[in-house]
Amino acid sequence: MKVVILAGGYATRLHPITLDKPKPLLKVANKPIVEHITDKLQGLEVVDEIFVVTNQKFYTHFLEWNNSYKSSKHIKIINDLTTSNEDRLGSIGDINFVIQQENLDDNLLIIGGDNLFKDDLHNFLQHFEQHGSSILVNDVQSIERAKLFGIVIRDENNKITEFIEKPENPSSTLSATLIYAIKKEHLSHIQGTIQQGLSDRAGDFIKHLSEQESVSALTLEGKWFDIGTLELLNEANEEYYNEN
Image (cartoon, rainbow, N blue to C red; front, side, top):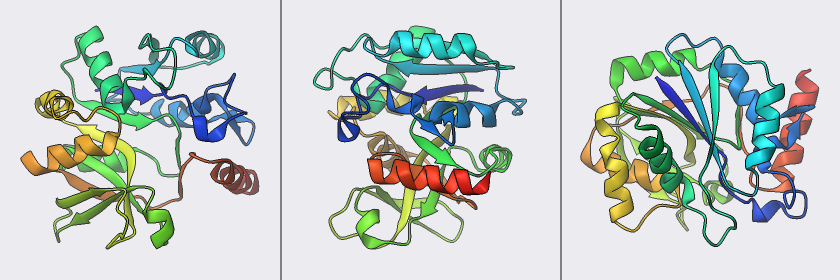
């Protein structure tokens, strides 16, 4: 299994602190966000390679981080060649970029470079082995917060029956994280999503895929943070500092 960590955004909502530093390299409890993620990948035997996809602006930042980070897995930094928020490829575009450039034909674990989560990933990958393409979901317990995410409706077998990206009136607070495990046979649906003119929001891929194939949703047991604002960054720092 290969891992793609999405770090190609420009984090404009976090300006000015992300003008000269990519969001995944911002520190939570004195550790870069991306490092919290890569630390969780070290003990996964099924994972043999990690790709971190970023942009031209922050490419050298990640190279420097990778040179100083001790990993038991091979990590490769991918430059998607974009230079600004205006010409960004988007999350789905970046996944497709890595697949094409690296000629990937493997099951894929996809993680947003700004997703912080407490859970161990072993259970999720066991779930993936049993149920096929899967995502992790989290109950954000707030209708207002749910408006910021993709909302998942699932049946009694955890199969996704509906996926609504950032609804104005959420019918549920069960939100999709950007933590996906995708069967290699389903990766062609990334192209299908892009052909629909959707390349920015990763959730649009899951919506498209779940309408064509069976996609399972497993609930996170621990806390999850999608670091999109300074408020959430501070909230994550408080949580992780208190834990330590």
